[in-house]
Image (cartoon, rainbow, N blue to C red; front, side, top):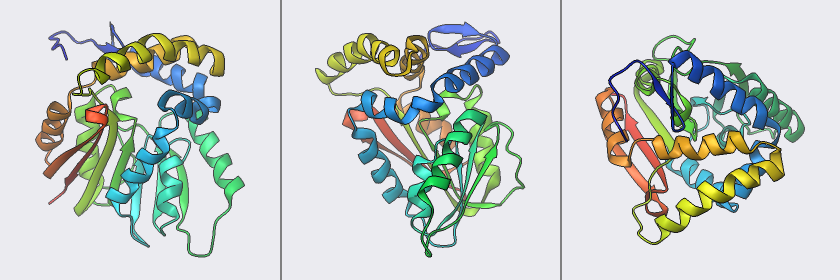
Length: 251
């Protein structure tokens, strides 16, 4: 990832002002909200479901725990954790994504042993909750879209209770030679076309691909989590690092 000394940030391969990035990212997810889960199936060939199951197994949500699921919009991760009895606050900066998640929550109902779900609009860089509120903070395929990732990590640390757990799953850079070249062709050339066919929006999916390319490597991002103040940090690669589960503890 290239270092820049000016006051711009990356929006895919472009350099824009932080305010412009926030606006454009909002436009992307407003555009794709209704087709987001369908596109996840298409983009990952259905593998994202297994990755999310694996992620939740790593989180080990417990009955009665209070979890903040940041950038959790459509509820995919939150539903899995609520099924285990956790009380999940689903936060997202994009109201359209939250609306989709809330509608899905109403449709699915809930069993007697299921935890609670609350949906709230939040900016990951300025979370509207007191310090030491949550047992767990999760963010899945969302932090690469945050304008100032260091601020989001600082907020994650702040709202966690001492002993709280941080878990993040994000796309990264695969270290498998051969697969890396195939993956690059697939993502750069095919995914925007799939976005056009399925969601009627090639440009948003082109940005999503570019945002993955611009995201730090596993080692670099783990160092960022550690620098934010988390202890016992770990990065678990999936598909050679094409996806990674990051974790850390607040002590």
